[in-house]
Image (cartoon, rainbow, N blue to C red):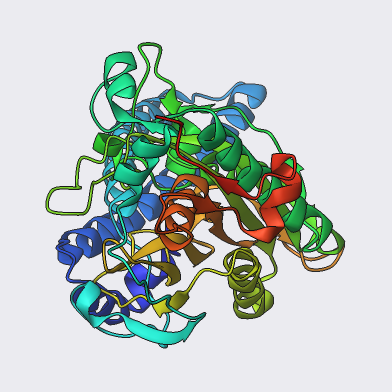
Length: 426
């Protein structure tokens, strides 16, 4: 959540951010609730001070053997009044916190102002788009022809919008995951984590998946949630902790399966491995000092880019506009690969920085120096990459006219030297 001081000190800044995001939120209500909260807090603190003073006076009078009945009556009346104010303060605090949880992050000034993905800005495009001598086939169709993707079996196993990798398909996705983890740990300095694939309510509130996006989550009968991304467990690695300045920055990477109901996917691309309910992803996560946020985000984006570059896929970096950026980030860059059969650019990675938005929810702080007051860290994360979509991009970009798919050079050691995936014999 944002710093509550901004509610009373810079409400117009928040109002402008909401307008640029196209986000409907009753800021006036929040301002009034915050005003009442501070009024009640002052009343309660004054009442507690008066009660303590009266208790001391009553104690002295009783020690002296004097009559303290009138002061006792006054203390009783004050106590009843204080109880009422404390109850109201509790209700107002609860209302205030609920409203704060619905308030999105404030975009940085350099974020492009726009209404939708049409207003996103292409930062640059890299890699050569292949020109085919034949009509390229969609990864979902080619994957089934090769016997490496089976959507019918997945439908029997689980339902619609699931996929089952088979044979070389399973090997290819596992190879991608291992290659990504090896690259990020050995070359980029991330610490590998294998976290739970379930998260509790507190952790989901920490990343702001709750309460805003509950409909996008799968929930178990005992109140746990299947993780929509490893961002959830990784962001909560230091929940309620105070780190030292020397411990920052902290880099984590993790593979997890990711589970999403995709409740808001109407009208979006859902063919093949795009927007399935379960997919696999390697996540990058950082805890950094506030003054290092911009530099560390750029490094994180470059770390994700290095995977696409090694796979020799054509891609572009997009700077998301205010209207297309998520609820939590204050800045986001997407990395999109070109899918020739679909003739579309599709996201393989989304890299965002949050400032202290998530750290406030997770209560993750650090001391700039040993005697300093704790401050909130800054967090950021990105896909490094989404394995299923990356596999789909490989199938479409590396397909040959005879129906084979060439394996990118960097993945061959992870696939036992396999150089291509060939169609099964008739």
